[in-house]
Length: 232
Image (cartoon, rainbow, N blue to C red; front, side, top):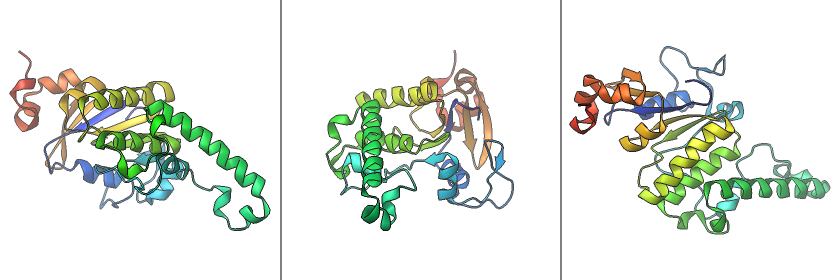
C-alpha cells in the first residue's frame, strides 16, 4: 500500500480478509512469509508494539469501553501518560494535570472532526451502531497512526452516518496523510472511496487495481460482485 492511499479489500465471506488483518496487526503469527511496515520487517510483532510503531486497527464489532464516556474513551488511548505512574499524581500533580488538560483538548478536537463533540459526555455504550464506528475512527486518530486497518467500518451504519464516515475516512488520508486499509462489503462505499481495490478469494489475491478495472474483471463478477457491477 502506498502511503496516504485508501486501499479496499473485498471478497466473499471466508476469503481470508479478517485473517489477513489479524496477521498484519500481530494477533496471528504468520506460518511463512513476512510483513514489512514503513520499510521495517515487523513479522510476528505484538499488537501493542505495532501500535507504538504507528499501526492501528479497528474491529468488526466496536470495542469501546461502554461504561466510560465518549471523551474518556479517547483520552485513555495515548500510551505512557505520566498519571499512570503511582508517584506522579502524588509528587507531580501539576504535570499530571497539564498533560490531562492537553489530552482533553486534543480529544475534543478529534470528536469535532468526526462529528461526535455533542456526545462527549455520553456513555459509549449508549451510542448507535454508526456512532460507535465513528468513535472507533476517533480512537484510532488519538493514537496518531501512520496506517489504520478498518474492519468493515460501514457495517450496521445508516446512510446518513455512512456518508459522514466516508467523508472522514477520506479526510484522514488526504489531510492527515494516514494510510487506510479497509475491509468492506458495501460495494458502493468501496468503489467511491478506495483506490486501489484488492479482491481476495479462497485465501489468495484474485486481482487488484482501480475500482473501474476491478468492477469490470469477469473473475471478480463471477466470484463476488454479481452482474449489477458488470460494465456494458
